Image 1 (cartoon, rainbow, N blue to C red):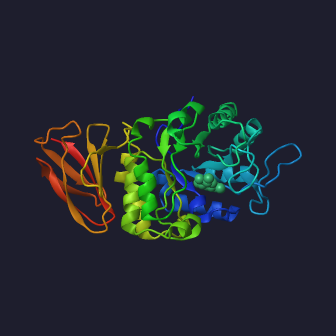
Image 2 (cartoon, rainbow, N blue to C red):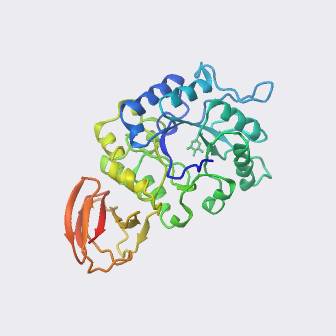
Image 3 (cartoon, rainbow, N blue to C red):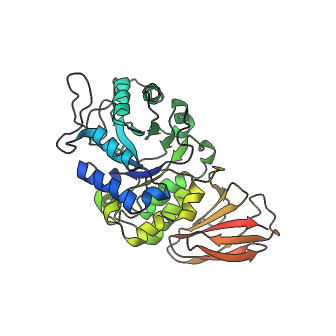
Length: 373
Ligand code: GAL
């Protein structure tokens, strides 16, 4: 028996850059880049094909049909290609009669679709909520697919995408392993703050086998592609803050940029092992907020297995400034001696007593891993 999603799932999803503009070549090239560029070995092992892989109509037996014009060898071929390279296969469907982009939805066909996905070697199902049938409750629609997946004969991570306000209170009971907290992220600082900081305070709902999901990453989308054009783009400091915040939140790390042409700065952000280790930490405690009277700062603490605590300070001001960090809110005395390591720049900062004052650039952050002496 396998416990699915014991750690926050990691991978890549086609939507943020490519929207409905997908095809077999893109998916195979992305799979190759996941391996050759070191993403797979850093933990990003699930490749998910989002909306628009299927036709609007089912075949005469009620089966979903992949779009042969863009996926000439079909979905089993993709699944095999991924598995041969040590990757996992994610796919998208919808709890209603149509997907959000207007293709065939799974309502009324959940068992049949789950079996079909299993036969293709699918390892993750992202399950959306557009065009839900009037009168069906959101909880029940997710239960229907959760049940069908468990009966499919294959271990499939169930990724619940936007149900209703308060989705975090009920989604786990459907068997979902992660649940989208909000509407779609955009490639902009405002959107990163809105969806990321919106997850702060919901930490008690998230844990092994069931994670809060503040949506996929826009790191490196660079104002291009589907979500990029909507948001307009972000700076590298903003992307760095975005990635570090998702790590602190134990959020699934699902990249969305074009992996085939990533800038070195973007790869450096996403392949930061110290931050990924914080996201995947064995204690699985999601960061909580340390109160501050200064509105333009968010201060988070994340206790790790083995006793370290990671501190993150986000400066939402459009200018650099100082912030005094202390640790007496987290179970330590302010007089305790604490050594600090900068997890973004990979440097040891020394040992401190009574806190320390930190300089933080505009729309930027610090992430320090602290050890009590
Ligand atoms: C949205 C979802 C996006 C993407 C899109 C596909 O509802 O939030 O992440 O999956 O549907 O149509």
